[in-house]
Image: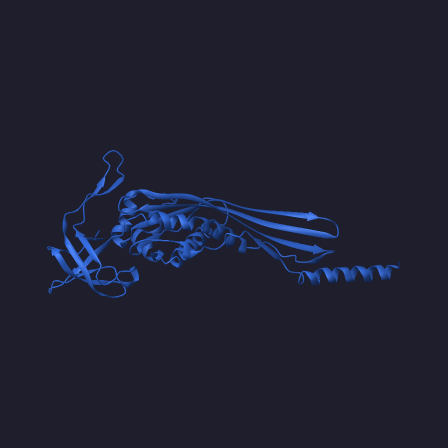
Length: 310
């Protein structure tokens, strides 16, 4: 075979190969667990208000970026679950300040209790990226060269009951994402580092945690507050249609009990039971509040705690 014929055949082979691959493009390979089946997430009672602190990056990679990415992804999934009212991080920052949440991801019980007190949240979620790594490998077969980029992320999430300051859920999630570039005789993708792998690996780690977060937060008792008592005897509470309340719902109203601290450690133990003032029933709903009639009792005041009646 002449040199001209050989190179013609070689060129045809390369063209056919690249054509079969759809051109010199990068092929992404992502593990299957990158979405949540929200229809399978079961919760009971009104939607709970939760706050999500910005996650702490404990690794040496991408300081100041991946912590925000991870907490934003978790917030997105929990909003899509339709099980919670997620408090905007800006509101949390105004109450606590980012520095007050600590640089290690650890939050004291009294910090969580303050979040519950000022934002009406039943739970505070904190998290950290404990492992984050990038690897790249190249297989050189002469004619064919393959480059694989791989990112692995491990995310730790904790959920804290703001009424007790106790950790109710803690778990790690691992996510892996990779891309593969193939070249034939130098033809094909020569792309640099694919930064979308960061987001995909973090999302995969978060996805593995969402179902258990929803399941465990479902065990936390919903609570609201009395906003105002009117001259006509109506009681207005800080929950409405967006929380899932319905006309006719009945609540027990109690005076807010004192927060008790362990005398040895200073750790918040939770509130002592407050004096029960009576019961109220929803008669009119707006998006973020409800107007209630008194069913029994009296002496209701702004700030009183509201819980679903049995």
